[in-house]
Amino acid sequence: MIKLLTIIGARPQIIKASAISRAIRDQYKDRIQEVIVHTGQHYDRQMSEVFFEELQIPKPDYNLQVGSGPHGVQTAKMITGIEEILVAEQPDYLIIYGDTNSTLAGAIAASKTSVPIVHIEAGLRSYNKKMPEEINRIVSDHTATYLFPPTQTGVANLVKEGFRTDNSPPYTIDNPAVFNVGDIMYDNSLYFSSIAAEKTAILEQLQLTPGSFVLATVHRNANTDDADRLNAIFQALQTLSVTHSVDVVLPLHPRTVKQIEALLAPDLQEAIRANQRMRLIPPASFLEMTQLEQQARLIITDSGGVQKEAYFYKKPCIILRAETEWVEIVEQGAARLCDADAQQILEAYDQFDTTAPVVFKPVYGDGDAATEIINILVSNYHK
Figure 1 (cartoon, rainbow, N blue to C red):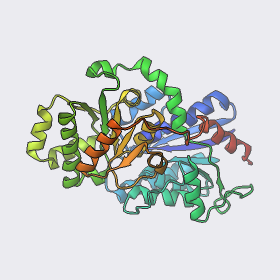
Figure 2: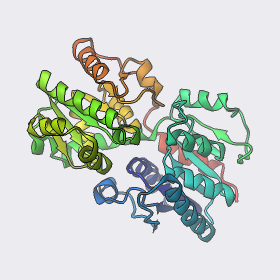
Figure 3: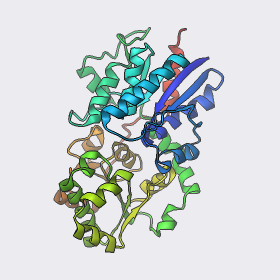
């Protein structure tokens, strides 16, 4: 029996992990034991627990209950807890996803205890090392034995840093394997799109007409913790809803709620409260978010995952950052980088609203990435 230890901690990782858990359950339940470790990085029920219920993921075997805190404190607690679990469980592989502090902690703990690391969403680069996520990506990639970039761009980024795509097994931390099998979030978008339509009523609850509203998300520290940037973004959303008579639906991350109250100009807060087209709602569940993404007219976000999901569902996207690790969607003309510039945000909306539809080319695989990842791990397993 192969033992996989999966590290999750933030909402996107729970979603990604569902694809791997589903592949194990459907095809390898007699050969693979999955042990799930939740670091507790996102511990709010709406940001975490409800996702296990919706995505049919086994409840975590361990929850470190780390909670929020400064990067160093949070990551240190995670490393300590994960290392203890690795020693106790002795897994054959440790799986990490993306670029959070949970990802970094898993990479450090496993590399120090000689457990082969499987990094899903490897090779992503914004080339902005001021982003904590960029450091997390680089460290995770350079400690991994199996790297699964979701795109050919991810492969190219790894090659620039000295990785080889023609290494032969047995694979080790010094002889790592790089496989582009596609994006597991595309797997999920295909699997859950019809389920979301059947099991959610978010559009009816908010009295939204499909194709008539803008979906927005704002959660990155660089935007929420900087008063100028936060005010510019919310002023753009407010202006957009008023001048174009369009509903703007904004599921609020807990951090964003706190910073709106602390940093948003009082007159702008009052204007937003008085604007019935500005729909500030609690965090959406995964299926609710899927339904909103599918039915939106356009998406405005600083989330890497939501950028990509916009592309999956063929929606134009305005990115509230100066750079993105998902360069393909910008190159395809499906997204525009607008940073926290109100004028650029409004101009991008006008462009997408008036120009011909974007062509969404299939750059994220065929929707079977999770199965291919598991097949590769099984075929290369030697005890």
